[in-house]
Amino acid sequence: MRFLYAGLGLCCVALAIIGIVLPLLPTVPFLLLAAFFFANSSDRLHNWIVAHNVFGPMILDWRQRGAIRPGAKKAATVSIAAVFVLSLLLGAPGHILGIQAVVLTAVLTFIWSRPNG
Image (cartoon, rainbow, N blue to C red; front, side):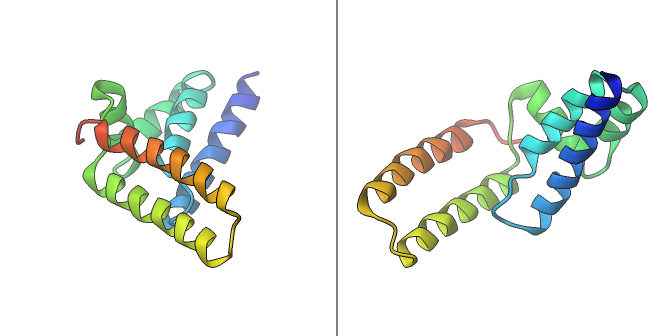
């Protein structure tokens, strides 16, 4: 089971790294999952991700205060807006746009209601 968790953690780190470059893929949720998987599989990997210069602060902000950094909030907002605009440009049906508007507004409300990290 430890190898499975370590493998899942590494996959999550890979997705988080892709998310840094690709604006539509979230980074922080994958880092939080990676930290969880590493905590259950390898102290070495868990300590590495928590102490990492880029990844560690985001994980610790969330663990300690449920906080999201302002830059991450802005990036999420831009990504969410881009998804909605893309749906509009591709001519998504009205009911799909309505569902997206409700869900994406709820996500943004959650993100912006978190304390700043």
